[in-house]
Amino acid sequence: MSSILMNRTRSRIIRFLLRNGPSTCGQIGIHLDASPSNVRRHLHLLRDAGLVQHSSAFFSTSPEHVQHHLEALAASFHATVMPSDRLDSMS
Image 1 (cartoon, rainbow, N blue to C red):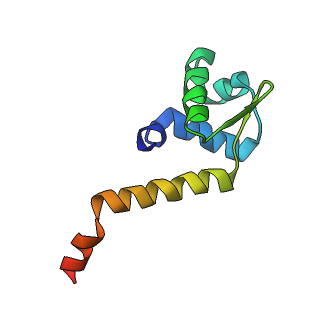
Image 2 (cartoon, one colour):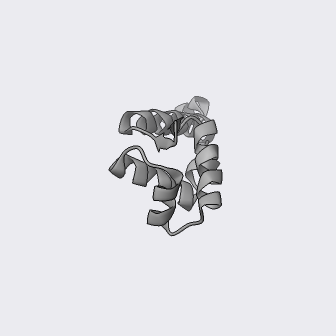
Image 3 (cartoon, rainbow, N blue to C red):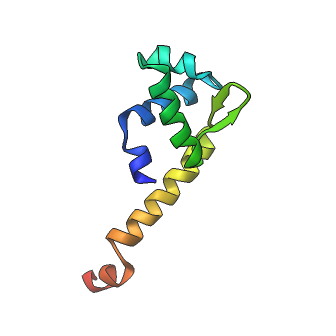
């Protein structure tokens, strides 16, 4: 998941969708000044990761949906980088 979110284009797509609501691949591409094929590839990765929904010709996301994924990523990161046994030894 972190590799999905750490990509600049994908994070810009998520921000665009959060600000503008459901949008087509073409609308997103125009705003990002990116080719439709490039945007489409990133949108499919975001959809496969569960961060973006696709209905008809529109892609969308919601603040709650993104927040849920960010919290899961943070919990995973915290558990991996700062295991509880390591935290206990620091006390």
